[in-house]
Image 1 (cartoon, rainbow, N blue to C red):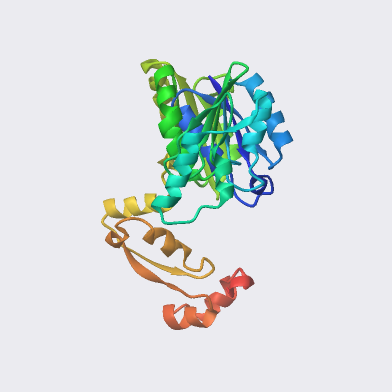
Image 2 (cartoon, rainbow, N blue to C red):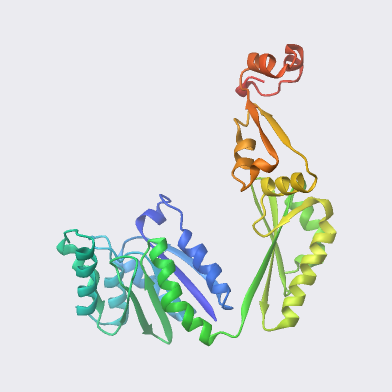
Length: 330
């Protein structure tokens, strides 16, 4: 099955906030063998939202929209969906009662505008939201299912798990399995040369790369129908690791700091840092790790050359000859 995700809100289109919902949904859908073929960010414009929904239902049997279900005048997803469905919005009494109860339980006064969240396209189904006031919506159109969830990440995630995940669990017999191999010290082009035919786009498992903060990640994906595909993923991971050798420092969510910490623990070593231009970044990364006291004693942040000499005993001549970046005074 294929899916299209529509993320709605001017703040997303303008880049004022990052679209974390689409990334989270894509990863969760992959667990059920569903490939997300398109993400689209849309403004708070009912015509643009309706146009995107019409295109999406033509191209995928599952469409998930997030955002635009709030109580303000720029929350227009309900109106756009009603237009696509060719129906009107009607008040859904159970949703209205749920919203009123939500405010009563918290001892808060409710603005009349909140009742707009209980409006529902006549042919759609309301989805309960246990985390907030905006119900979700399920609609069927042109052979596709359209799920609309609030844009608040916590609300969206809980509603996905409650309303959509069980349905996908019942209907899906496949999964998309992934692995990520993290490397450091060689560039992306060199990684590609070393991996060679493993990066053929016609392979299953599929192998690709991306770079962030100097770390080259090799991402492996397999459409899994059974044990043979799981073995193929494991085999490809093994081939990649063997070819890249010492450049590999971790798998999946491993971090450079975490790997350093693990090595220090295994070797029963302890570390002290002296930092200048990094401003204490190395120490901060290490102390973010649980149990960092097992291997990290502490350190100095010495930005000024005089402090490097006074506190660490670095000869002034060394700083004069080897200081490379005037921006951080050597």
